Length: 452
Image 1 (cartoon, one colour):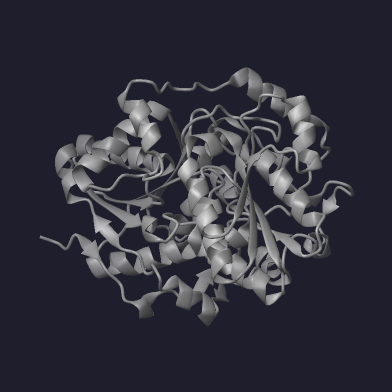
Image 2 (tube, one colour):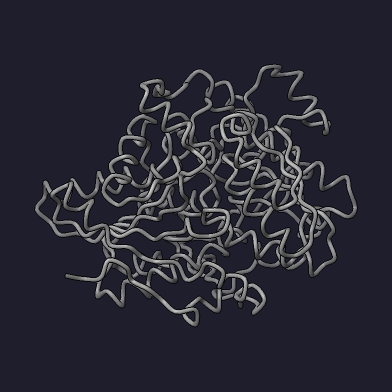
């Protein structure tokens, strides 16, 4: 029998990040300055990002060196294990070979640490004193809090209100690492106050929290903004996942047939898939499955067009799949997937039919998560459970087709802070949120006047 764990050594941690912009099937549409309606000048980003991250955002170089200081910190948890899910395969009676890349072993419990460390490092190099950010489920906020603690930076986190209430121990973890955490929308920012006037009982959204964090950073000279997904440099840092998986599959004598990840903004999915995209463009038969909730069906229901990345329209306009910047999704437990947009790089690949989007209901993903926990022993975050559900669907397809496919799932985070959600599911209290078409149409109407 093959090994259950495919292990790498610390020397195998990638020394360079892979930049997919060098290998895209067509150039990425540029971000647009909403005031001028012209492509963004890099100088426009200086008030909120350090120079090095701006350069990475715009770079077309295929490989970007990972500083030794970052690799040393990566060693706390990297390289991560690629597991063979033998027991899940047996339960499904599938001929498919299922693997999962365990990114839950970082200190904060998810893949988010791969970019949090990098972003904190570059901010520290430029003598930034405080980093402002948003967080949905709290995975990103806790990862950045940990990174800021390592580099002795202050950290301010605007946490989507519904997740702030659903996941109080994520807030506790951020506090342990020294971050200040506020339920968004707040009264601390102009954006927060305006949104509360417009939507007095809102559960919050990532778009709203981004508005608050961007405003905070832009109005304080000693602060910068940090984003946990969507932007090119964030997806770049996550490429360590897929680069390690390529090495591990080679050790196992495998070639991936299906790669699966959940998508909110797109960072963990991109981290797994992007290092394999060139292989597909060169003719290899690989299926990339991007999984989102039906309650926030950005890739499967939204148009591919320019939109703001935040609710208060403080960010540049990005060409992406979007449900409209004012769209506020229902309060599903997969808080990290409640984002109205999607990374422009992921969106482009969806538009080119290179990536296949797939939307699933909330109760389906919890059912899959519990099967996974009972067979493999690990309890996934609700976000990660979306990828597990899709992986199971693919394994059952292989069973019906009597094909022995190799399926790789990105196990992006653990569910230890999500036990209340599991209790609600087991108690029969969770419901599926169907596509709120009338709300999305209302939000999309606001896109018509953007003029790009």
